[in-house]
Image 1 (spheres, rainbow, N blue to C red):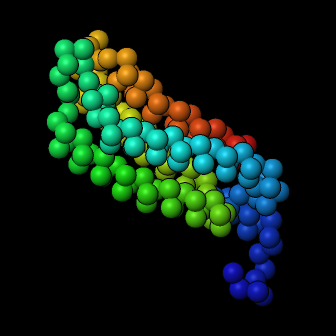
Image 2 (cartoon, rainbow, N blue to C red; image 1 turned 30 degrees about the horizontal axis):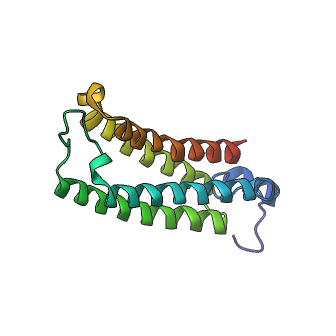
Length: 158
């Protein structure tokens, strides 16, 4: 804003609450959020590596039929990794600069929930009884980053 503005800093913060998290609050929660962000990225990287090198555990049924072809898994993995890289960069930048971090949390939650829901709807619910234990484990691993994102959201919104 212009330096000769009649709007006080408190009024500006009330008008733009989504713009940034207050410095006092950010100093209290910064370490927890950073640790969770690192954990989320590590979990996703491990999952990506696991799916890349062991595709037989990704969406595999007891009848030893794969729900997705290897080409579909590769294309899906490429699209999701691209989305992940862009999302992580935006999320980390908003955290680092403390600009629109609240909004970035909400957008990250929406995107992760949409991806999980689409997988649940299209692939998992059609054959939930036939999935193998490793496939169910790979599905459950998706919920750990979602839980960590929810905890970040709760910390920022408090």
